[in-house]
Image (cartoon, rainbow, N blue to C red):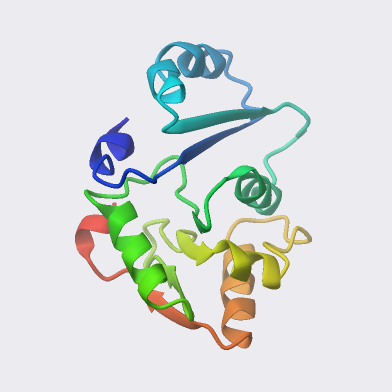
Length: 163
């Protein structure tokens, strides 16, 4: 809920929440009760993927990016906070420079997977490589393939966006 509140200034923001076969039955109840006002308002889209026997991060990220409606895509893990006005920052950065993408810092806080990219660039490199089964290599590979197309990597440096 904090990320929703922190980004209400950007009216074109869609939060897509993907329940990737979470075994906790409270997740569905939380989505149907607590998220319903946001779903009804069109701010949140909630999807349940019931078929995963285990959490496959690269597949989950590709699935979420496929389901998203916008031209700017950004992964924010469930245990991350964006900070106030992050969506506006990301939109301005990628709209003003469509030859770049944005990455969170790889400093051990679990933000290296926060990658903001234009949909066309995600499609150009074929998304996250689903042959990666573990956490981390799929982000590095995705970032490297974006750079190989000539895009510039811009790091998120503002500490308020790194929680």
